[in-house]
Image (cartoon, rainbow, N blue to C red; front, side):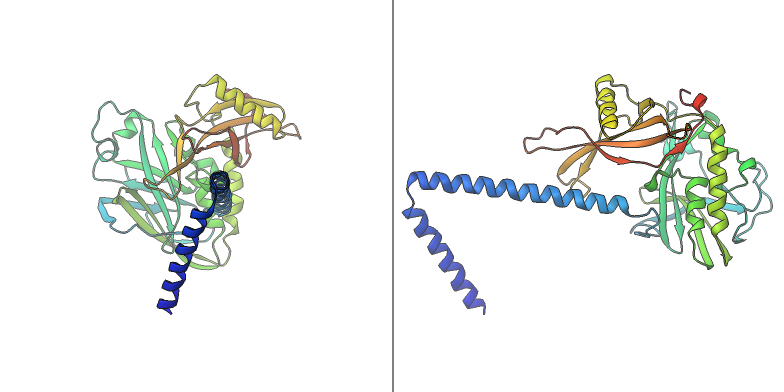
Length: 358
């Protein structure tokens, strides 16, 4: 069989050689043109496949369970722990701590570390004004959420504690309403914290589950803790999430602008209007710069770049909302970037009209 394949290859090489010797100069030029067309078609096919892959990835739910408890090589918690309670926790005097809950219970947490956030994640830099705390939520051994809480409060940056509300009574929320903290968004444009956590809890199947939280950065786990929760019906958490989102209407406004570029903002507005948006009240770019999209992560080839904006508008029923909208540019063969396009529109988040310009 191997000998037959070898003979076939030799025959093909000889045939190609004879053809090359026999073609005239004009014919050879036509052959070169054909190769260019074939290469163009191949690259167009690759681009279509890439876009289809991206659409499939964006369609996957945040809790798809695609990640494991901790990446290979992750080191155990370095002296910190996360504790839990069914009632709000006083950071100065944690009491009534538990590790077992029933479905529907309120859930609060306190992250404790052996160093300040400035020392742990800010390298002790006294000039640091913000600290991003990377937090995992792991259900039954699968990571269903990984996102950042940004600490902007100077006193909190120099603290060894972080109040974490998981499934709180909306009227008793404190840290989630505190403008000294910013909560990153993941898939589905749900914010880390009660928004994302109650969404995940509300999707649990009847029975008993183990929930773990950990602060993880570059393989180091600075703080970790877990609890079990059991019940026949987890839907109350879905209902609780709606109440939490309604409560957050009374807090703050749109995300802060991280980049000002009048020409880019005008382009974005034009694309939104062409896409059917109406009564747009405000648009702010919420990324400091472009994010590079790579073929397969790491240092692989760059295939494009994207940047996000928060857009507020008036809905058909007279209410107001804002959404995160991602814009992208594909990278061209010559290394430049193509036209700006809308690649993803997040969920509508209700907002009071008076909070739009806050």
